[in-house]
Amino acid sequence: MLFEFDVILDKKSLSRFLLFHNYAKLSGILGVVISVAAVVVLVMRWSDWTGTQKGILVTLALLFTVLQPMMLLMKGRKQLQQEEFQLPFHYIFDEKGIMISQKEQKQQFAWKEIRKIIYRKDAIYVYMSTVSAFILPESQCDGHFSELVDFMKERREK
Image (cartoon, rainbow, N blue to C red; front, side, top):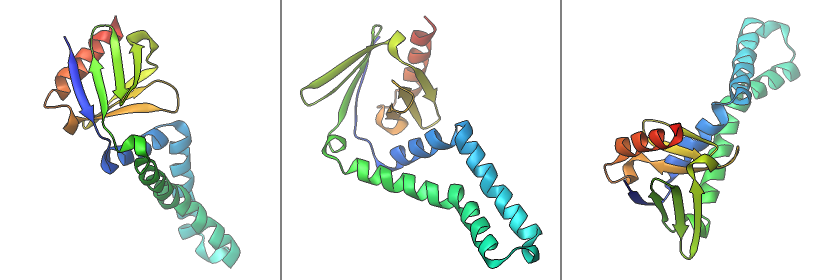
């Protein structure tokens, strides 16, 4: 079986990936817990804090719930403005693995070389390292998204 797609990464897909990638890890969860704890402490003991302490707690409260997501989204926008993201990535999935090409550049990965695959309802994230992944939005899989998910799961189990 063979699946072949051209993918042009869009703002929505990249933003969802960046937020998922950063907040699905222990460090992301811990950051949100720290922000929520800062809000709780600030509200419960408002009158006990000085202006400086309140400012620090407000900053902590906003850091992982507002500031970091905004910075991630801005980073994604900058990334999408790069020339390589203006052109489609061509993906071929077969029994041997995944081939990704763009212009004259090609990379082939055997299934065993793939670090991990995350299946979401709207995308597949194929991690080749701990920090980078290929993003396959459901909307760009030509109506074969669920078939591709099943195919990839079968290949990874072998």
